[in-house]
Amino acid sequence: MDLALYDSEHGYYARAVRRSGRTGDFFTSVDVGPLFGALLAAQLAEMAAILRGESQVPAESRIPNPESRFDLVEAGAGNGRLSADILRAAREVDPAFYDAIRLHLVEASGAARAAQAGTLGDAGDRLASSGPQLPAAFEGALIANELLDAMPVHQVVMREGGLKEVYVIGDPERVALRALEGPPSTPALQDYLDRLGITLEPGWRVEINLRAVEWVRGVARRLRRGFIILIDYGHEARELYSPAHAEGTLTTFAGHRSAGPESGADTPAWLQQPGERDITAHVDFTSVRDAAEAEGLTTIAFLDQTYFLMGLLPVLADPQSALRNPQFKTLIVPGGLGSTHKVLILGKGVGTPALLGCSFRVRVT
Image (cartoon, rainbow, N blue to C red; front, side, top):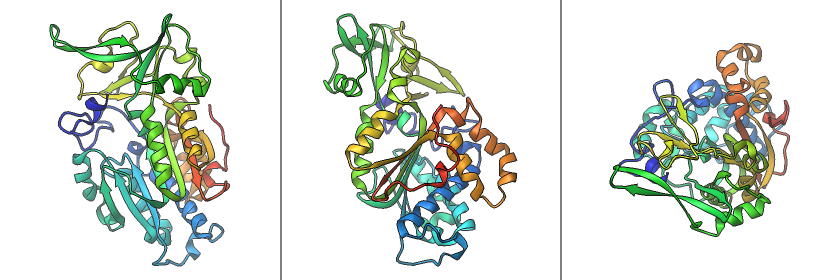
């Protein structure tokens, strides 16, 4: 999965500037239009005000302070479209916030990084850094939209004799890759399940994302003070590792069509056409949250994207017009982006503020 997605020469993400949208393989909230970025800008502006101790000061009354700085880190930034939407909305609605932003774009694909300056355009004056690694330290907020689901996972299956891991091997006769079960590559896989109190039944096939846990720990250590917003599709562990997902969630997308788990196939869909398809698995938000809290972060909220965006709607200049906007309807539609995508908000050194994004309802469906 790591090679198929991120190999510098052949990887699916490494070879292209953009993979989503109508002409791509899948659709994200960013592809809906700039409204998603404008709503996030409102939440980020409130977070910046909290860090400055100005959360009760209206945006139009804030005075730009050249010494203030708000590090905005976007992880998995692609060509920078989401950050561009955030910056342009901030510049229009809250110039003081815009002037405080120092943007850091984190992206593995060199092709996508090369396109960021063009995407940011006249908002490029806020760009402080762009590279494949997180900043060594930052104070402000990190946002990651649909990043964790694309991190390489381990797939395991429970057999009568115990836990097995699914390996990938070459098949010279068929000139193809195929899956083969063997002993777990690391005791961390069983430890992961034990820590969650999960007992897999014989035949259950699931994914374990050790990389996501390591990543959020790294972010927590680099964040001096501020917030983390993680938006992705996934579940609490008790739902992810349950009969409802007993065949796993590892899947591929190509041309807006998904190929789901094939537990009986030795060449499952996710092994076909490596480097030409997206590969993804649902996120275990329980383990991500636990890892963050173990590093000193506080969970502020976990909720559906629908309720998060509904809480931000009133801060727009014309909420009623936005409510009728087809973009907004797409972002909150049940069964679509609104309910499949969850928002996990974490904080460090900020307490548990009553954020705008949590003002409508904190609910997970």
